Length: 219
Ligand code: MD3
Ligand code: FE
Image (cartoon, rainbow, N blue to C red; front, side, top):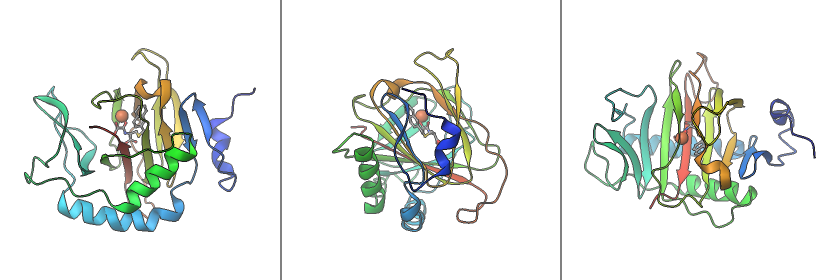
């Protein structure tokens, strides 16, 4: 078997065969493009009910990425740690419901990548303005690591950093564009990963930002 070339993967969206980054991790180039208008419309309602905000890490640093959530559980960070909550700490109200457009897309992408029956209860919305980044980290606040994570990229392109099971492992750079969906499961689920600082630009559909929707089964 030959190793697929990551940088050629986006050249033929019509082919749409999942590209395996490694066992359990698949890139679905352009998978969300047909749903992008519905996602953007529904995202506006989510953000109106639970505004994007810059969370503070347990170490006291303000994150450059602005975040909010929808679904029964939402990921939050503050001086006391990282966790999932059922209420927005800003409003003390439940997080907005996960729109059907979001849920259906996440489920279809997971199925396409070999994870049938994915039923996310949490969707983290990350908004990157130019310069915003996510340093290398693992996602380990969820209950079960057997379920995949589905991530949907909208707007400006970004360079995703894909590492290994240890922080010091070397990282690969994976370009992610508007409409790309990545499904992370299996052994890849606990790998270190991050996002390089967003380059300035203007996206015709989303403006001067990148939005990432990350779907999880957290509870
Ligand atoms: C690989 N978000 O929210 S999405 C995060 O683009 C996060 O906003 C990035 O990392 C973003 O935690 C990357 C892709 C992603 C999400 C979760 C993963 C990749 C992952 C969990 C395990 C392995
Ligand atoms: Fe992450």
